Amino acid sequence: MKITKASLAEVIYKNHDDLTKKQAEEAVESFLRIAKDALIDGSGLLLSGFGKFNVKEKKPRIGRNPQTEETLILDARRVITFKPSGKLRSKVNGK
Image (tube, rainbow, N blue to C red):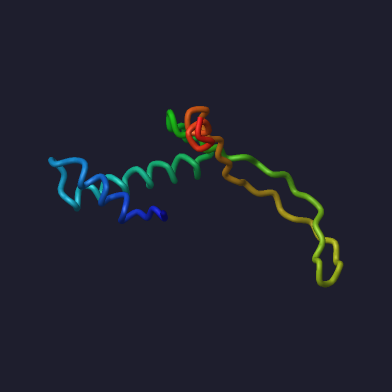
């Protein structure tokens, strides 16, 4: 099952009688905006019972173009990592 922003907003709308569909969509958009801003700033994002998103700094490194065999320097970059919580890991593994 693929979860999209629209399907997530639909589930929130159906589970909360006091929210309109528009409010559910805005809630999803607000959460995603807060999450993106935190990661862009380099902060972690911890969701209890789900996991933690972190931003790691990668150093420049030597790479190679496989077609030309040319050696080049790959720039430093930032990558996002995810570490699931113990509870989520257990449920995914059926424990």
